Length: 261
Image 1 (cartoon, rainbow, N blue to C red):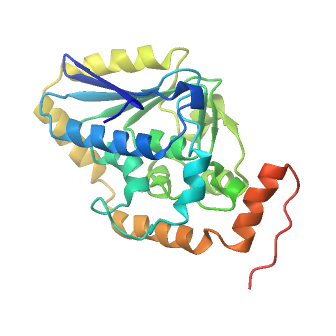
Image 2 (image 1 turned 135 degrees about the horizontal axis):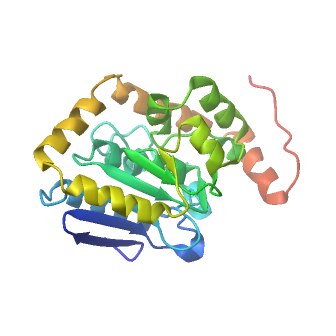
C-alpha cells in the first residue's frame, strides 16, 4: 500500500479512503496498485465484516489520471493479470468479488473509472449534487474497467446506452432514478457508517453466504465479458480517431473524425 490510500479497521468495519484530494482522487498507477493491494488484504482478513469505500476531499474519484490514460495504450489489456480481469478492471471488480458487503459513499465528482469502481460496491449511497459520467467516449474509448459487466444488474439497458454513447454528465438525483444509487443521502459517509454498523452486527457467516447467493443469481459469463472489454479497448487505443478525440478535448475544439474503414 502507499499514501494514495488510507485504511482503518474498527469493530469489523474496514474503511478504505482514496487520498489524492488535490487531484480529486484521480486514478494513477500508485492508486490502482494500492486499491488492489488493500482489497486483497481485506479478502484475506476474516475479521472484516463490511467495507466502506469513499474519497477524501471534494470528490469520490474524477476518473483516470491523464498521464496514466496516455500510457494505457502501451499496456496489453488482454492479459488476465488478476483471475478473469486485468489490472484496470480489477480495481473495480475486486469489490464485487469481495466476500463481504461493500458500501460506496459517493460525493462531488464520480467520472469514468471512478464510476466503475463505485459500481463494484454492493450498496451505493450518493449525494444528490454529485456529478457522474460514463466519461470514456469523450476520449474516444469505451468503458473497460468492468462497468459493462456490473451496470446491467441494476440499470436499464437503454439508459446504459445513452450515457455511454454521449458521455453525458448526470446528477446524483438522476443516478437515483436510473438505478446507480441505492439511496440518495445528504451525508453519504454517515449513512454508509450507519448501515455498516448494522451489517457488522449480523452473523458474518450468513452475510458472506448471502453475498455469494446474490452474486450468483444471474451467473452471466463475466470472464468473457471482461475480456471483450479489453479487446475492444485495445483495438481503439492510439488509432487516428481516438487520438483526434483526445487532441480535440485538449485544444477545446470540435473533433474531425474519419469515417470507419
